[in-house]
Length: 259
Ligand code: NAD
Image 1 (cartoon, rainbow, N blue to C red):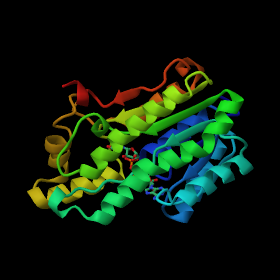
Image 2: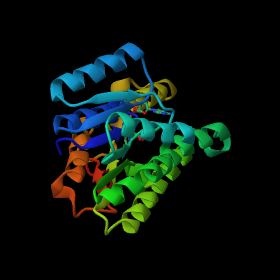
Image 3: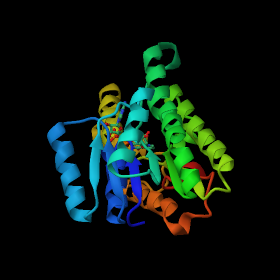
Image 4: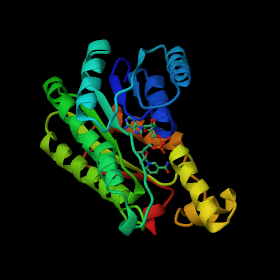
């Protein structure tokens, strides 16, 4: 994978950061993306570049804005070269009963969790098929395969992302480009830490109890999946060994959807 150029959206934190590190460790040049503290982002960028010896750059593009998504792909192409690997990972959660679910949150989750993957994939696909190599990996969720209450936008966008994955995969199946989804179970990252804190307030349970009794209730391995375990699946899909895998939704969920 040495010399491949990768974009990982939402890679300033959590799963995306682990994916960026893992791809760089395999020799890929990487464009990081996402929000956060500028100093921390630069420290991560420099550390990944130093550890891997590859080129690591950063784009602050806002994945809720299609023009930003296109500009990010153009910038990656200009600074790294044609994009070989696109990991659509940026994602947001909002938890609320349907009757109170804010319309602007519905629109935002659709834009970031689903439409950004469409716009980014559209922006890279012609170059990938022309060069007869490409890997698109969409980070969906166990909730892309099964439902959960109070998460209508999240569940809808993650199911949609798996549909988008299948459609792209079949369209370009003969071109050397693959498109797959990875479906994580619960991984301890800021997106979950926020929900644990909210649930602890509502239920009166301690954060540890919330993790064990609420979040891990449906995850048979009874521990969070790690961001590195998700990154390992992404590396496999992007590697030569993953060439024959396309259009799939690969669960890395500790048995969540096996029940
Ligand atoms: P996280 O909150 O740590 O990371 C989210 C990343 O997305 C951050 O880098 C953030 O800056 C970025 N982001 C948010 N809005 C953005 C925007 N508008 N433009 C650009 N970047 C934006 O969460 P995570 O757990 O690492 O989540 C990564 C992906 O994994 C998400 O798609 C999430 O739905 C999915 N996922 C997470 C879990 C879990 O348990 N943590 C489970 C299943 C799926």
